[in-house]
Image 1 (cartoon, rainbow, N blue to C red):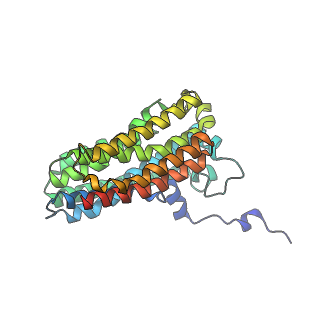
Image 2 (cartoon, one colour):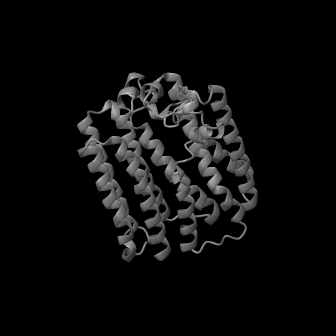
Image 3 (cartoon, one colour):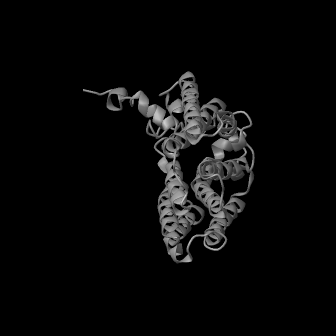
Length: 312
């Protein structure tokens, strides 16, 4: 008796496909909320009237991530680079992107983006009202942030231009760190800016290795990431420079910023882990492993950063 492939590997539920589309299993953006709470506490910022807005921050963080990722999947499926990179038969169904695997249609994916942006816009209005901020300026800022997020692969296609992806991730990470703090504290400190820049470098590291692994498929459809346009050796040097940049920012947190130098050892583990990551990716060529390990680095780094802020 034989069992069909469909019976042996039943299709996952629809909600799981949407989770995959929005990359919601990548929870790491929620660390920005934890760091925000730590910064507000360390700076003795009054949270009077800010609790409703604070509770909505995780929703906004996930909405920015999920809408940008979903749009990236839509454009990647349309231009064929996702089919080239993730369409191999040996990829498990839920490892392949949902559009590539046939779990969702383009119409469903586009509907997901519209729904996420709509819910998040309502959350922005609610946040502004709870903080006593004019709704129209808050909506204008949100329109810029979400508009840029959707341009990652759609519209202006930042990720298709050399350096655009790096600028996008760095800038977006800075924004989601600084803007919530500014809206609640009505000021911005050097520490907050440095935290945004440092965590941006952490998010760039796994993405960089993902770009190297996707070099062939991206190049075939003229997605000109730095991994595509630069020689492999040059891009390796760039990754090491990114590592050095993250170390410089870490040092600045305890010199220019106001973190207590005695708490610096709390960030030493992430510095060491990033060295291991780059050895995996740059020296051993284990690109996918280096990419996955980069997210573990973010786990350790964000928790160490939060502890350093609270103990300073």
